[in-house]
Length: 471
Image (cartoon, rainbow, N blue to C red; front, side):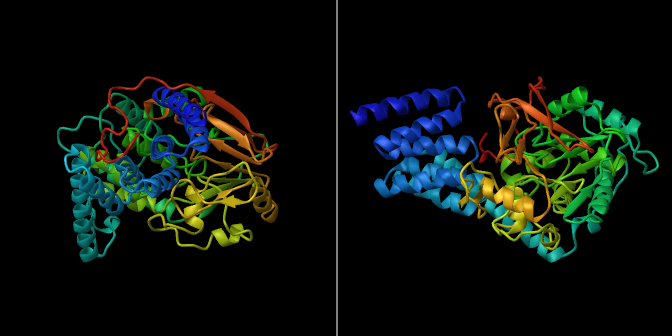
C-alpha cells in the first residue's frame, strides 16, 4: 500500500511541477520518498529543488540516488545541473562525462559537456591575459568618444543630469542602447564612489521622511519602471535602497543596472545599492549578464562591471536599527558590525566567511543552524540566531532578499526577519508578486506594497546565457 501511495504522491508532485508550483512539488516528492525512497523520486525532487534555486539540496538528493543505484543516469545529470547553478564548470563537466560513459548517445549531455569544455578554456585564457596585464580594467580602459552616428541621449560635459537619466530610461524602454562612452563614464564614476564606502553603510532617514527598500530585480527592467510608477522615481525626497541582485536571468539586466547606477550617481545620499550574490563573476557567467554585456557592448565593458560589482557595499544600516543585507546573518554568534567592516570586500565573492554569508545565507523556521541547501558554505539561521545578532548589535530588525516569495515578501522569526523580493513573475514563470517595503525614519515600522508583473518586449529570460544555466 505504501508503494502505491508513494507513486500517487509522486504523480501529484509531477502535476504541480508542470504547473510551476515547485515548492508544492518538493513537498509531495518528500512525502513519496518517506514512504518509498527510490532514485526516481529523489531525482524528481532534485529537479524541483533546482527550479527553486537550491542546488545544494539537489546535489544531496542526486548523491543519495547514486548510492541506491550507482548507474542511475538521471542522478548524474541532476548533479551536473546543480554544479552549473553554482558556476562550477569543472565539476559539471565531470558529471556530464559520466552520463556519456553510461549513455554514449545522449546528445544533450554531449552538447553540455562540450559547452563546459569551451567555457573552461575561455576562463583559463582570459585569466592568463589578466595575470599578464596585472592592472585592473578601470586603469587600462579607454573612455573613447561618442560614435558619429549616435543620436540617443548623452552625458554633456561629463555631468550626469536628471534629464539625461529620464531620456536614458525612455531610450531603454524602446530597447535602444546608450553609447559605450557614457556607459564606461558612469561605471568609472560609480566605482570611485563605491570605493569611498565602508562594507556596511549607515543611512540616516529623518523622522518625518521615508525610505523604500526593494529586493531582487534580476534584469526585469520593465518591472523596475513599474516600481517607479507606483512609488515615485528616486529623488532627494524619495529615498531608495536596492538590496542586490540587479542582474542575471532577466534579459534587460544592462538597462536595469545602469538605471540604478545612474540614480545613485545623481542622488548619492538618497539612493543606496547593496551587493547580491549575483553581483559576481561566477553567477554572471552562467545566468546571462556576461553574455548580455558582451552582446550589447564588449568583454572589456563586462570586466569593468565586474570590478564595480566587487566594490559594492555588503549592506546598510538604517538609523542604527535596521540591518539590510542581501542574504542573512552569520555563523559566528559573536559577529558585530565592527567586525563586518574589517574584511576586504573588493574581490570576487568567496566560498565562505562573513562576505559569503552576507550574500548567500537564508533563514529557517527552526532554531539553530543547518547546512545551506544552496550548496555554499554558509548555514541557514533560525529565529534564535537572528535574535542574538540583533541583541548583540543593538538592532531592531533584519531585512534581506535573495528568495522568491509568493506574495513578494515574508515576515519571519517573530517579526524580526523580513524577506523582500521585487521581481514579479520571476523568470516569466514563477507567478509570484513583487513587493517593496517603506520605513518612516521616526517609527521604523515596515509598510508593504505588493504588485504584479508588467508586460515586457520579446527578449525571454536567460536569452544571453551560455546555454548552461537554468530558469
